[in-house]
Image 1 (tube, rainbow, N blue to C red):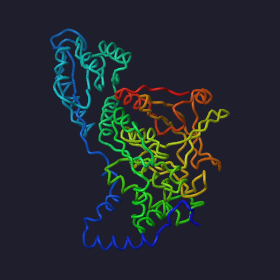
Image 2: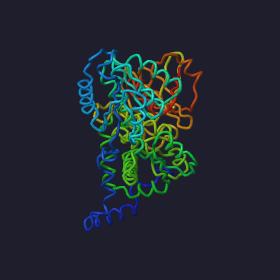
Image 3: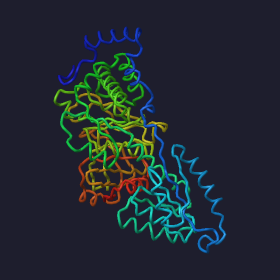
Image 4: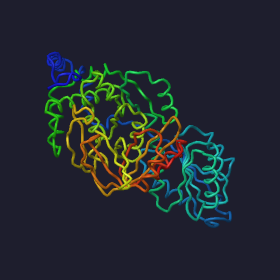
Length: 474
């Protein structure tokens, strides 16, 4: 039986409009562009931008005594590194230059606009790195070990003390430097990205804050616009989507086929809005709108699909979590899982609980874990997801808080998928360092976003380049 808060699966108006749309498509294919966009590859919605990085090699003249040694072949080393960067970061345009002192470095800064600097200290004495650091542009400072260490240690520590936008890399593993460059790529992609926020309230200065601190554009969308897209969703495609979800689920418990079809229509509606606004993610004030009879169906299964596909679907119009998910998707290639964490001090566990979670926690090309289709827990209506996520894996849980330019973070090892009827459907338990300390110091709101993998270094790097402070919980 349909809830009074939901629109019917296929109203007479939807049926007739679908027939009319089919006839229109036959005579004028251009009218179907929005529907086609909703079914296009998720990759087509991702920003196609090139990151421009000034690659600054700093070292003295080879005739000069110092580290690594007098007569060192800097030119061969620069050619080797430049070739490796081009191969490792194909979407980055590297602009190499040599600077040996502060005066030359200042000319490099004045040369033109770039998305960031990669300062590679190949040898000392050389004073160029400090001038670039003090410009407070997003900068990755790299010590070519046994070449630039003396200046690296002095300049990097100074940058950290002053809170400058600098990330430091001192490692013989080239991948560590390439990973830092990908943080610059992620920041550039954020500046070319849009998050839709489906709300029936004024956001005030919030979009401006997100744009200034995280680079992302926030575009508000009304419930009426979402419902209009839902009404236009193709009924046959909604059924196909519902059947796919149901056939791939380990279990379908409460929801009927008709209820899951509503979720299919809502997914198509969200994809249509993303395509129409050229957006990469959508957050919906789902509880308020659904309880108020202003939304046709829960978006949980649609969020599940978007996150599996490398886009972002975020619950409860939580823009902090949505922006966190988008940035980390660019940085790590993995979806985030929003939750209302529960802490069990008796087991030293934190339980990440919510009615939406991905089943491709290692990214769109990774394996899928089992999932159940359940009703939404709080009101026992609609369709939602219980994802049985992989165990014995390190996770990194965090949230960017743009209003305070802060990132809050903790880590844990997954140990159980809790089977408990109370509260949200997915309940992933992780063992943490100190559950009591984690509970006592909890701040920054209830929600957190969990990602599979030890991503602490990547988070610290991108945070430093954005000028965000990292606060470690527990």
